[in-house]
Length: 194
Image 1: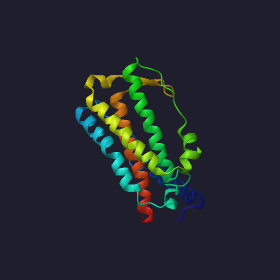
Image 2 (image 1 turned 135 degrees about the vertical axis):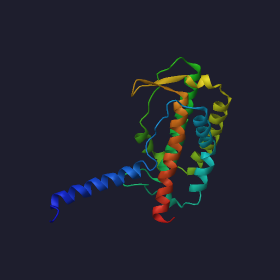
Image 3 (image 1 turned 180 degrees about the vertical axis):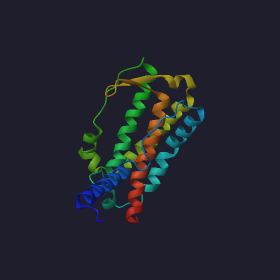
Image 4 (image 1 turned 120 degrees about the horizontal axis):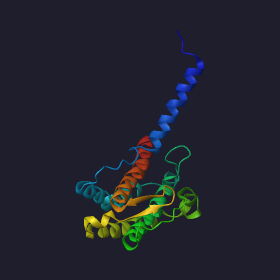
């Protein structure tokens, strides 16, 4: 018995959507453990500490043409991803400081997609953001390591969800975010044999 053409078409669309989802989330989406343990925090801080060097080693050998290649269809280029990481992690660091110096502040969200379309994100040398990430992560890791565990219960309200996010969770989110975008670039390099 033959499979109807319409069924084949829908199977193709489902497979294509699954492939795109895998390209968007190569390591899956962030899942926060409950409770967050000292071991979770230690592992996340280690990711944050070594991420800038890992990222730099991954992208330094790339040509300008390779840097301007999207990591997936309709996705950002490698260059845009690197600049996005600097922008996003800058916001994370600022959110840490707000949460530690104000009582559950309401933060300002930003439109990361629009930021990635700005001239600097599309054209600036990656070294600018690589240097910035090195300094920023060194400051963030130094801050986290120096805080008592109960300080990491401080948090902020995100205006898009109107929910409190504590600093323990934020540490996990940005460790995941680091690995998430690293995997975007790494998977493109593997697919292209670069």
